[in-house]
Length: 224
Image 1 (cartoon, helix red, strand yellow):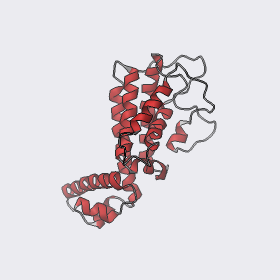
Image 2 (tube, rainbow, N blue to C red):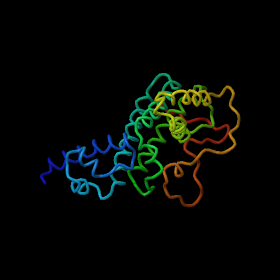
Image 3 (tube, one colour):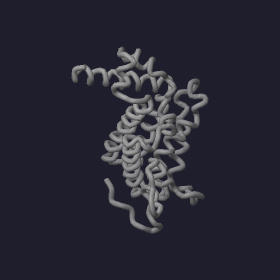
Image 4 (tube, rainbow, N blue to C red):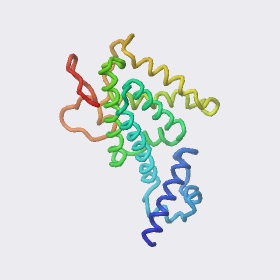
């Protein structure tokens, strides 16, 4: 196969698989994906050894889209609004893609591209939350990993009834955003998850601090 044809087929495959996974979840068959792409089933396996590898590629792409959104928002003059917009973008992504949350739990931590994208997502979320904390609009004990997981919380809250109320997640995102404000904050009963816990990266030796965690009374980093 000529290189140009291979590149074109890979693009068709990625687009078709992304659409099928988003519409039907990760149980969709390779045959169906190949038919939508207009290529043979064998062509799929020339690019990806397994369906899981194909799903990992698409999941990483989705995470990178959100990373780029976060980086753009990190330049905003209103850190609180930027954080809220980032969270909304993440929930909207999950609401329109049935496979997103499935992939987050089903893909192996050994998928290096997924792990790297999750790390970048947590880092950009930490930049956004730290900027908002510096303005006093977000409680000090929230981390970037918390923010990413709370995006999933809002989308999952309405998963069983989303077909009847596709925008209902926005109600629960509003509750979460209110909970991030420091006015009525109380000490949280459990510490934040660590970055290796979030990404599935192997750990060795001492347990690292959660992403964005700061000792009590320590100054916040000047980010953004």
